[in-house]
Every structure is written in C-alpha cells, then in structure tokens.
Length: 139
Image (tube, rainbow, N blue to C red; front, side):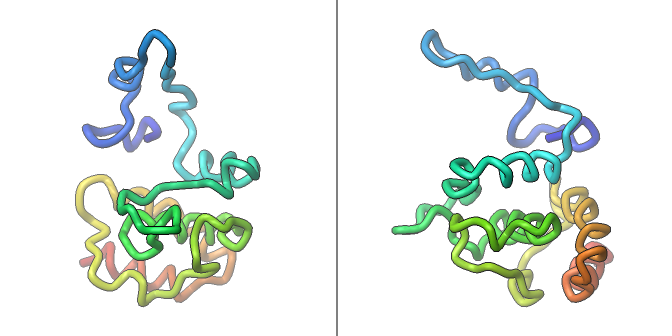
C-alpha cells in the first residue's frame, strides 16, 4: 500500500521486516508508489509479469482464478495501463462489466484502488468500466 491507503490490511512497512529470517531479508520499499505505479513496474519485468500471482484461490493449472474480486480488480488495473493482454497470468485478455457482479468494492481498503484507475480507464475509452465502477462506488 502507498501512504494515502496505508491501513491494517496486507503489507505494512512496520510489519514486513518482521517476516525476515536469517536467510531472507524482507524490506518494505517504495511506499510513495501507488498500486498502479507498482503494476507498471511489474508489467515491464517480463519474467515476473508472466508469473504474476495475486489470487488467494488455489486453482489447478492457473496462477489466478480471474473471477474473485482481487483478480478482477488487478485485471482492471492492468487494462487501465494497457497491459492485461501482455500477460499469460490471467486466462482472460479483457474485462467486462459483468465480472463485477456480486462484488462490494466499497468495503475495507478497496474503493481508493478503484477510484485511482478511473482516469486511466477513461483515457483508454473504457466508459463501460468507468460507469460500472462509478455506479458501484456510489452505492
């Protein structure tokens, strides 16, 4: 998480180093970078991007299920930076508004991530996704 979205969920700069061991040092860096900035970095590192796992579900023969909220959010972020079609980490190469059905994108820490991708989606002409996300954020 970047500084504006830092909360008691996921990675945290005060906790991450505590997961280190004698053989493995974990260092929390780039706190000023947004999630989209970090995705841009990963998208330009081909080995990491082709083996990119965000999903917590263990789906056989796939890195990511492509259906859960975290997968759909990440796929939408990748669409917003023009990179989803460049990775084999997700089965789908595009995101449709229907993938959002059943999700609550306003709970916990999610809303700021969706708000951040709206301008980039708009620039890419993805008004279908912009309207879907805006509608869900206004609920």
